[in-house]
Image 1: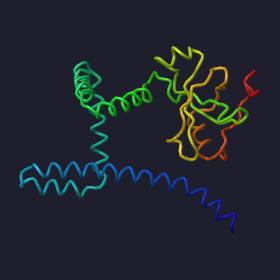
Image 2: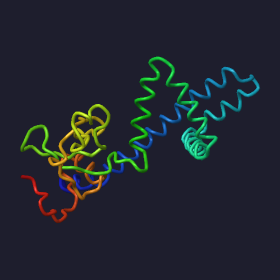
Image 3: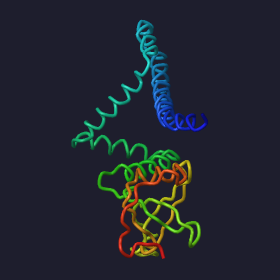
Image 4: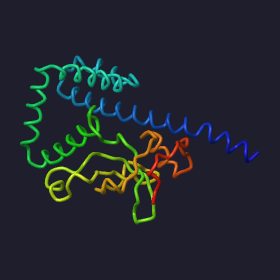
Length: 214
């Protein structure tokens, strides 16, 4: 019976966690939309109160509207006029003290991660960390730039090493290119391997000549 219970749990647990995360995300977006409606109701005429109250009671409407807003925004900024407005938006926020530090940092990270031609999280790597002889999986996020590159040269790569089982926290390292081993597994497979603490390993692939750890 214990074997059957564990097998059933392994079948349903991933689905249950996935549904829980999706419900949490829907609830979060609905809460944001509800806050927006509360702000609108404070300045809107009294006659519009029934309509706003009705919108409050529609579950999932916030998700639909956020998705639609993102879609419309993406379509608008894909032309010259839209890009001009985005530049003005950036100029506004980059001139506000304190806000500009947060905005610039988040924008640079998002531009790097979601760029279609970027290198962020495109390659899984095998590296020695936290000491020689101890191996872990990291992800190449690019190469050092700016002043750092002038000191290190172009023989280094930028690597993000996620923690287990929470990959949203981790460590940023700059390692010699010769000390990292590129893996054929996909980023998704590597993340699954990290999150599962090595219990869910990707299918083995033939080892490339000269790529075995020394």
